[in-house]
Amino acid sequence: MFPSPDGSSPNTGTASIQQNEFTPEERRVLLTLAHQSILSALEGCEISLAAPSPHLAEMRGAFTTIYHQCQLRGCVGYVFPVASLYRTVAETARAAAFEDTRFLPVTSHEAADLGVSLSILSPLTSIRPEEVEIGRHGLLISQGGHRGLLLPQVPLEHEWDRITFLEQTCRKAGLPQDAWEKGAVIEAFTAEVFGDRDRLLNGVSS
Image: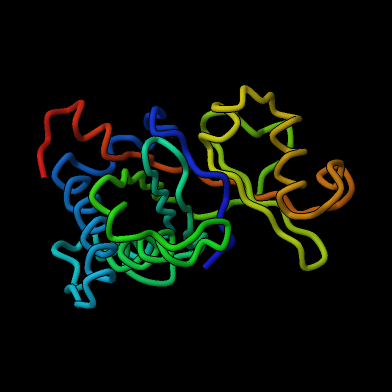
């Protein structure tokens, strides 16, 4: 799993042009799976990771971000597709709840009040700095064994411009802020972002 990026805000909507790829029912299934994965770990039981449809069986990268009382509680994901999307959501939800080293593991008391946001990633592509679009692209910058990733919604939340976004992604990688101008590899992706709040707004129940 990739080190956790800054998580998305519970008030952030879809941040990419791919917002119609997943149906409301598919979103419901994936969000329910994320919650069930966390609860099953707390209860010491297993859940099926067999994808219920060919679409959710596709190999995709994804991040799961969890919140408690609107505060970030964990964010972990796969940049590269290593498993079916269905399995990836289950695994990253558990990891966000129990393995994000910035936070103590989620407790049974917290579990019922957790909020979940999912970011389903497109494949990575090389991009020139001037091509980066705020609100559309997430970034992965790497150089000399260092790499940092920020999701597309992060610069929107912080009201960053393109240059600041590039600098902050370098900082996330542990690189000088101007590394993007000095040979660092810049790759971009888009993400379809949805969460529990979107499901409630659209009137889709669990």
